[in-house]
View 1 (tube, rainbow, N blue to C red):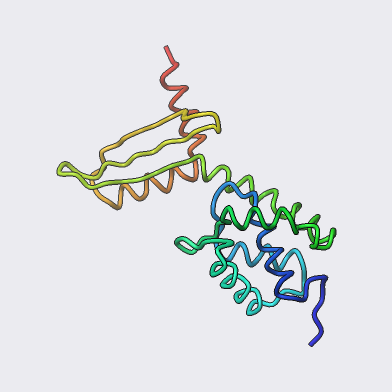
View 2 (spheres, rainbow, N blue to C red):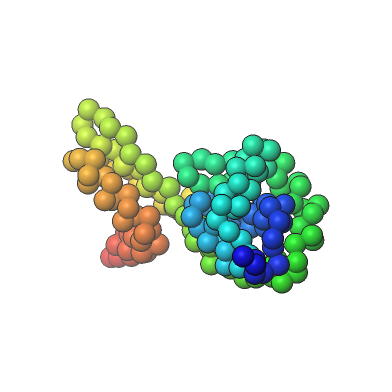
Length: 173
């Protein structure tokens, strides 16, 4: 079967993977990384892609933590030297596809949530920063882990809205 696109060799796939993750502000989900690779160039098959990822991890170019990938310093240093080996059209397409992903990951990296059980219940911690520093931090006592999980989820999805509402409420009167 003929491959389409500019990328055919596993080495080129490794370069593309490292190029895609080199500037990300946070780890990227495994499925999202594969989707980006496939969208960048139609010649990338899943099995060769999977082998390339495993080889990059074994070589210390990237790490996998909880199903997400992040580039190592070694990987960053190497891709900077060889990224020009990727076809210009592929790099250009990758940069275009990365824009919304970068925004999403940057937002996610600025919102933090967590919970811990105590004798009186579950303490849920929520915080958000704006890139320069923390702008809100809340600690709430929840009645159950289910309630804490719902609060964490809602805060992750609507942190900016909650921040704005809290400021409005506190600034009234």
